[in-house]
Image 1 (tube, helix red, strand yellow):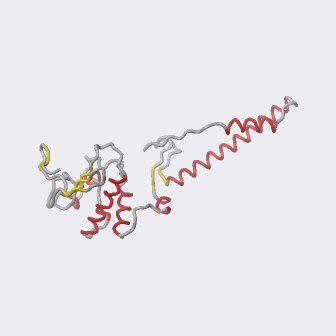
Image 2 (image 1 turned 90 degrees about the horizontal axis):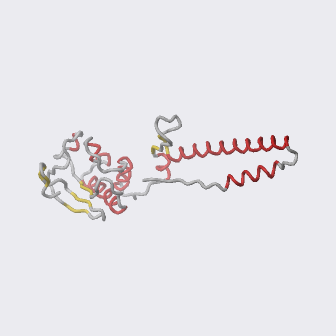
Image 3 (image 1 turned 135 degrees about the horizontal axis):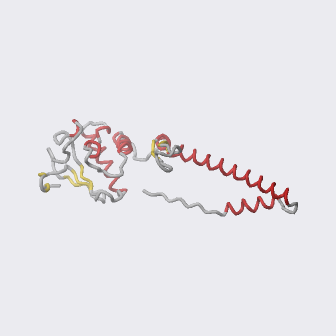
Length: 209
């Protein structure tokens, strides 16, 4: 970051951000951290660069992510900038993927609260309104929707509930049909036994980051 690399002179960033959350001041003035830029507001001569330690696939430690947000908020406060001026490298240079797996809209929302002197907790209302893609299958699947995660889960739970009700009705109809063929069949006992076996089924949900 200080001396640059082959083909690109240093310094490469104004700040360095370690995985522990420690912030390092690298340089002042113009740094060579953003080229080429697709934003007039984020050229090398008109932006402040933060280089966060990450190999491009590592998860972000909470302390590092917390420092990331607070540093951006403090810089915005110091230079009287709105949180909207905080941009990920990937947003001003389509050739760059960093910072990976960070939703910049969420990041800016937290920074905005910090600029105003608030905390970085997400409110229940913000969580409810936040748009989060939850693909159940694929985009080609007509059941897929990119919507509020809570609404999406609610819709699927209602769908599952309707399916269970339909299955229960089918089980009862099947038991009634068996009883008509064999009077010795105890319909209620048979239905109760089938339901008990269904309830013993364990559903495993795997959630990936």
